[in-house]
Image (cartoon, rainbow, N blue to C red; front, side, top):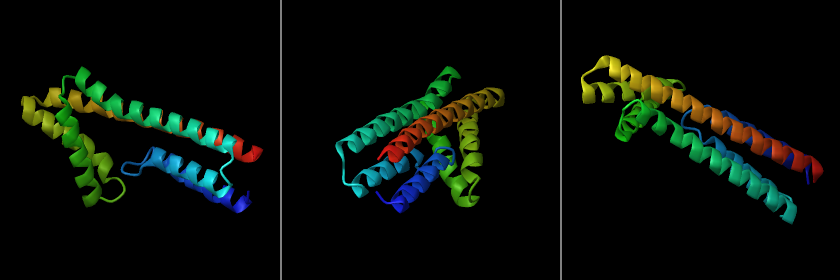
Length: 161
């Protein structure tokens, strides 16, 4: 395998790791795509397919768990799931209005406004927003951890091949 390919795949995986922390950048799918490109570029050895499968399982598990945590935290705070949907809309609007950080601002604002309109109670809306924000941070942490494990497995395998 060419060192150039390993470097490009490694850089793509670093972008994927950043994507687990940056809203609207699909971090774990980028890591999966980079691992797939590595397998294809190196001749698709059976051991590499195994590494790819392990990276995929870890990444998919990270995506599922990371996506469920905000909903779970919202439900423990009493907010229905549709409030999270309004938060996602707020994130998209925020990203369009304020580049780079708008999603980080728009998401909690969307959750707060939706919950405030639903309950007419600002303190309850604040509690729901705080709980779902904690869930989002936990989800990002899980996804980043899954990405680190996947990239680490790939890095060990890349050195071995």
